[in-house]
Image (cartoon, rainbow, N blue to C red; front, side, top):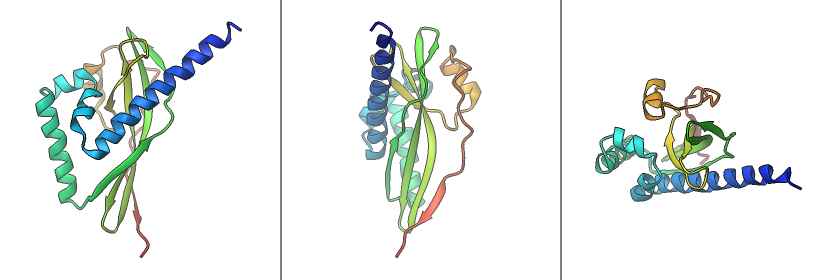
Length: 163
């Protein structure tokens, strides 16, 4: 019976990280900047110049995409990967599918969120690491576990809507 405890604990940890990553993703797609910033890794916010500056950066990026023809955002997170100990933190890679709807179709992109817990998996913060340069990641997360490999980014795929 005691051998089941680690399995149950691990399942619970991945359930929590997926639930919180999903909240982060949905807030991103719906323009809920307060929730996005509440669930963003604090060192990334500081590195970006603080909450107000980061909110402006996000808003500017969204507006730029809308000027390029994006009319809506959607997506979801997939199952979290393996949990990795990293110093006093736990790290986890979560695949995220981002859908940018255009007037004539949609772009679908796979990216990755890095989940970071400072309290043994009870709560998580996130940052998109799909295209993050390794030197920036190392600066933000000095205890990053090298066993956690971030896949190389791929180009978004475009799907035309049928008329």
